[in-house]
Image (cartoon, rainbow, N blue to C red; front, side, top):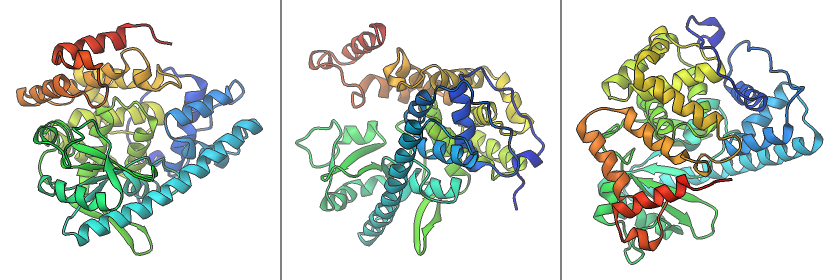
Length: 396
């Protein structure tokens, strides 16, 4: 049996200042990953319960929040409790559907001669929490080889999945430019029920975790097994993924915490060293530092002391701002919210080729926040003008 966090030597960082609702949310949601004794629950006398429910929805952890409140014997007002219970049931139903659909899609792709790996999703739910029904799942992320993208789209298209990205609608498949610039393409089911993000590499920047990753099976239920990223690569990938989003959702950090509590201090040191070999150690340090700050995770001294590196300290500060300062609003709805993510990208790794790829993406991509048609015709200058209008204008 792996040691519980309270039985392991290590460093626990002092938590930052946070509102009582966020503190309670973090405590309750992380309870599902706890092994052994936990710190006492925060005092709930001054809790704004409707705000707590909104925070849970914003961070997509209503299921974990409800389970934590229930296990701790805390009872919110009836209307808030009913709302959380309804959201938790919906999350559970959706995750069970996602598990069945993931198994079906991997099987059909395999029958078509295409091997795929599940990224995040139900594979992480089983690895992190040991069960389905707690973790919010929106998309099914599947990784295939670049040469299998077109055939994968044909197979998925026959199942009712159609592309929904801002690509040229006259094309039946992504253009060469799209494949070079992006890591994936979104396919939405014609019923409106499911979304598949079909990946041909792990990140938009080809310098991050390049190469063919190892595979590992994860049992979902009964004979149902999916293939996902194997070994340390899976946890390292999850750290980099969260870092690229400036950890704007607590959901992603809870995955890391749940997985990290199942590792020894020696395992975490090995993971950090492996990430260093892959030139993404800052993302792993950032994730584990945040887990210690927000959830009380014991971390090795070498990782705690990594805060002395300026870029890791900056990454920690950016993530705390995106998590704590946006309140119950989406990060992108706050002034300079998306800029926090872009700043994080440039801090994660080193080398001219890496930064050049980041700059090329920022200049060329319009898929996530397309400027008006007039500005789009101006190219990079138009994108800069659109960014200024979006972030320098007044926001509610």
